[in-house]
Structures are given as structure tokens and as C-alpha cells.
Length: 262
Image (cartoon, rainbow, N blue to C red; front, side, top):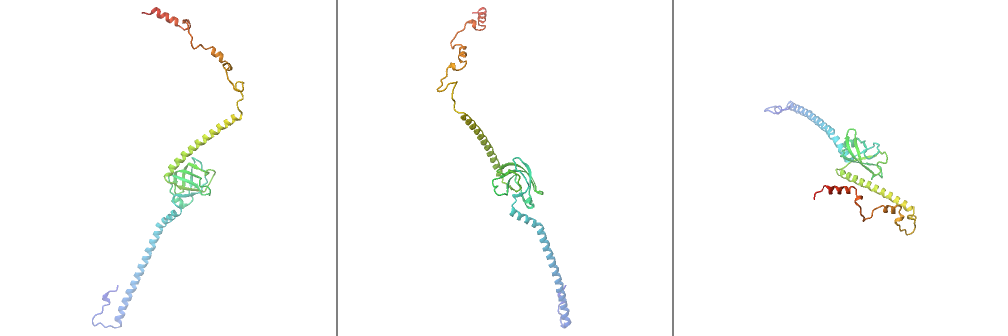
């Protein structure tokens, strides 16, 4: 390392060529050593920057990719191409195809199942989630509500949407509406059956006679078979009975008269 003492000029010192050459050599050597040290510092700095950027890529890169995927695709929606015929009460599994969607998708207790095909806006099913395997993308579920033509056959263009807590209330309301609709349909069928019976009666034509008579018919007692004889066998509304006509009446009276004390 260059020191001040190496460059000091003393009294009566001769300022010849050797004097200057020696000092210039020391300065050149010091500058050369400084350049080597600067190069080493620059190399170390570059190595540190490279290491830092590598760690940033390793740690933040996947996170940034997930954030970008979430911004583009959302974490509440995923697609599945699993062939399936949807029916009420069905228990099955849908596989989420995309790795990015599989990793991001976060199902709620109930999810909405729709289709990507045009003209299916009113076709949907509500699924109760029974489990979700993020590694395989398998969503286990039970179908609790079917609407429209979503169950008219096997499809593979599914869109699974996580729903808010209000979906439970909507599900209950939809179930109540379906029960009311079923009752209304049954009542309509009963009314249709009654109408068909009435039409059949009317089709047979009006009544042409009563008890073999036509026109304004007035029926008497004799017109009703057996009515006169049945009434004749009945007792008069005001009538009397002898003691003998009353079972055990005489014996009862004798017993009272013989043994009574007055």
C-alpha cells in the first residue's frame, strides 16, 4: 500500500530522474492494485445482484404468475370437460382440466354448474360440494337442484362457479317453488280428469225418463217398490200396550205387591 512517507521530499534532497521515477513507480503500482480491488468489488457486486434476481424469480415468479392467472381467469370460476349427465340427487366428480384453474379454484359449500354452449343461459344445476382435491382437480359433489335442459343428455362443456352464502337461501326458495309447482301440476291433472268425466256424462245426452215416465213426473208412495208394505208393518205413532204385551211386567208387579211394606 502506498504511504505518504514513500513520497515525502526531504531537505537538500536531489530532485533528479531517480527521485521522480521511484515515486512514479510507487504511484503506478498503487493505482494498479486499486484497479484490481475495484474489479473484485464490481465482480462481487454483480454476483450479489445476480443472486438476488435469481431468488426474486424463484420466490416471486410463481406468485406473480398466480396473481396474473387470478386476474385473467378468477379464482371463483373453473372449467371441466368431464362427460356427465346431470340428474337430481346424482353424486359424482368433475375434474378441472387447467392446471392454473385447478390451483386457484376455491369452491364454496355450494357451486353453480352451467354450460359454455350458446342458448343455455337458463340451464343450470346447484351442486353441494363434498370435497375438492387440488392436486388432481377432482370436485366431488351431489346435485341438489336442476333447472332447464341441463340434464337432457351427456355434456362436457361445464363451467363451475363458486357462489356466495345467499345461494343457500336461493336454493331453499327454489325448492319451495318446485314443491308448489308440483302441487299445482297435480291439481291441474285432477281438474283435467274431472272435466273429462263431466264431458263424458254430457256426451251421453240429457235424462229422457224417470221411473219409466216422461214429461213432468210426480212420484207417489206406490211408485216406490215395497214402500207401502214397509210402512204398514210399522206401529202407529200413538198406540197402547197391555200388561201381557210387555215382557216380565206382570211378574215384576206381583213381586212388588207380595213383598212390599207400606
